[in-house]
Length: 381
Image 1 (cartoon, rainbow, N blue to C red):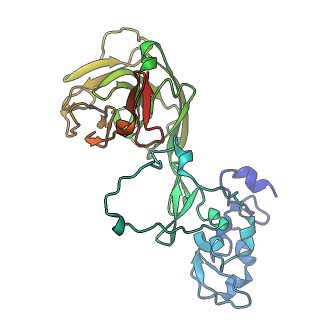
Image 2 (cartoon, one colour):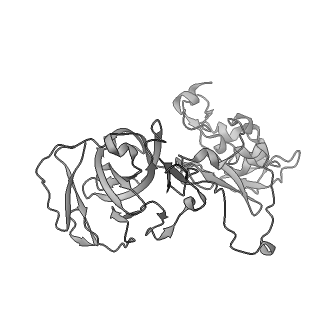
Image 3 (cartoon, rainbow, N blue to C red):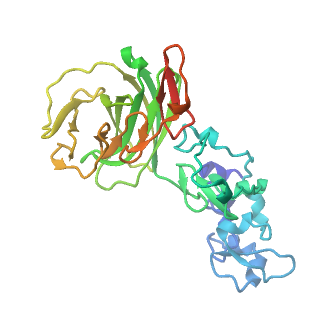
């Protein structure tokens, strides 16, 4: 009885064991008109399916009492339809329904609820929101996500680990657990971290995420960052972490770290990182030519360096003109504009000023932080 859960602990629907066999098949493959078991018992148990001649292979004949002319639905919709329920639906693991809130996703992704939204239209043209209650049974509609209603249609919001219409596919990804410690004067600074997934041989950037770190506020915080990537056929993957000290006027590079991914061939990887910002690096001669840039050492790898390109240049050796343009106060790193505080967007030209309505007393100064999270400003004394 426990053979399938032990063999396939991560595939929650692969729970049907074929007769006289160690083979386990998914519950949605039972009674679909396709014989998956060696002795065909996945279809032998379905007399209703044998009489439903109108259903194509790969679909399920719904149970509508004594009639055999029920609708034929895709396998993904069978146990989510109230008028289409099969014997094996009870074998699906039931999930506990919990109310959904974006406020719990502050460090899970760049989604947030803004405290105030500017009215772009007159009040007469704004329609009142309509509340559409979700049934507790709707929690099973999305395999690894959250169901929401959009124009009366159920849709799935997937976590970074899954994708698909019903969040039924697992993403190939790297999960990074990051702990940051700051030393010296940088403990009073506001830091911005750029975390990028690279192809080792070429240093081509595959995917990047960005976080804003305030040492005083986030001293005990551990970040979880998801880097989603396709399977590489040209080389190993690695991760580069770049730290910047930022104000409302400029961006200054502080340190760089480089991490190899040992088991890059696996579809899912995990990397735990603890970095010390402000720690001095060992001075070694630069081993690479940076034609239009500055050679920068990695803090954790003595014999490896990185070319920090001047504005308008890119490439592993800063030898190619860059097609990306950023605002005057920002800095272009890995084809991404790193914005000073108070600006955001692809080119850092969008303004973000939550401090406009903040009055600071006793010599305090308000600094804007990250518009993607609920912590939008920080007051420094």
